[in-house]
Length: 274
Image 1 (cartoon, one colour):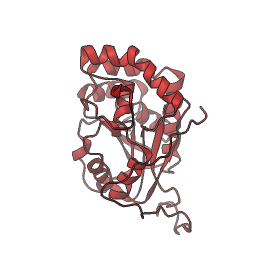
Image 2 (spheres, helix red, strand yellow):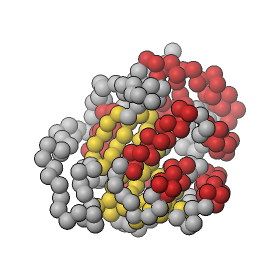
Image 3 (cartoon, rainbow, N blue to C red):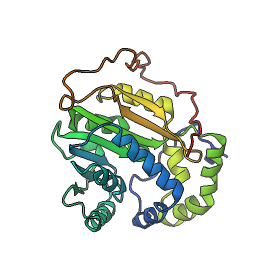
Image 4 (tube, rainbow, N blue to C red):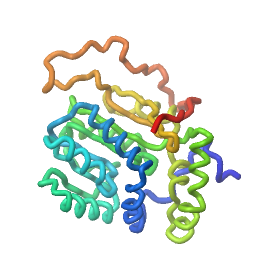
């Protein structure tokens, strides 16, 4: 029965999705629920207010996020980085078909050691990759290193504190995805990803201990999928966009909960509207 418990985080056996999952992503991207999750993520990225410059999508997978951001923000040039060679190959092919006109590039690399100089990105994003990372604090610090002083960041991942209905959805994926893929490919599936995800409190502690600028951690779940967001404060206007900094009174994130062993938050990833 421990397999069905979500109280304790269980890391995935591999940070690399097998090649067949690249094909599988193409199928699930057509599912309305998945399209809703992608759309909400992109909307959150666009709400950071970055319209020009260069952005980085860390753990880009097949590149869907990069292509949608560049479609809606023609002034942005995006870099989609992934650890898996077959993922960046697929992203590059799809970008060519989409006609990004050179506004996307697809290097292979490790988020723990980003192959970029300091302070070169106006925007750094990552969607549903954090539960793969061996050392998420190191990756967050690498993001901070490559982010410009007035840059923005936006990350989303699964939240391990699922509601009863969200648990039932995850359990239902076990016979359909987890067992066949785990048995034949050494890869889990959606439920294994949920077990490897972090709680709201754990994510809050990671942000507070990282070198990223002040931000916020909040829930943006759908009825089916528990989702936690890490986002830079939108009240910090870029110097290129405005000459004065907006009044931040009452918007500061409390840093009083810094501990070496943070206690996971009891807050549940409540169900939101689709």
